[in-house]
Length: 254
Image 1: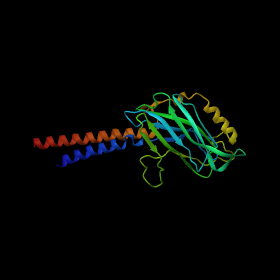
Image 2: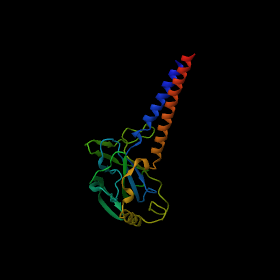
Image 3: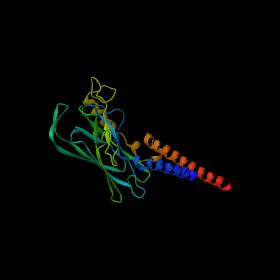
Image 4: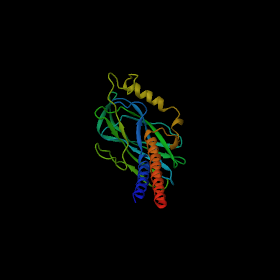
């Protein structure tokens, strides 16, 4: 009886690890290329994995935070995708480069011209943004992911500190502290206007490096951790089953 219980426990443990390491980690996320400093400019990537086995991702909608409007939002060209930028009037005008702005980008929508993001792949969507706010340490972007079968996944739940991650968390961009003496968001000490010009030039470069990439080739540390946990779970489960079978045979021979 003890051997059977151990075998069952081992199998359950292996299954549990496999469940924890499956697509629960595959969320829509946002990460900067380098530093995203308060008051500066940055290029950020929205990473979109395909979580379905029988449908492709054909549309992505990113809503920009209304409480911290950005004066400059410019998506980079992504092969196979069309980008549409939506601007809206601001309830309260903002100052940017000595000018008062009455409208800002509130949404960027990417629509696939071809197959989109097929099962087993992910895509990065780069956007140049700025100037980043100085009165917060994070920006929350809400995302809608549409599949070829018309399913829409809403990544809009705002993670709360001290609580478990929601099932469909919104992408959150962490901002580092403003750098002393300049607003470039990098190490070259440029002014806000110079930084914006630099990001414009960078975004004009070919976006071949942002083409769809297989999940197996991703360097994302979370994905790697998930795979390791899955392998460990399988080993633990198999060991438990083998031990149970061996113990049962010994008892039978006795």
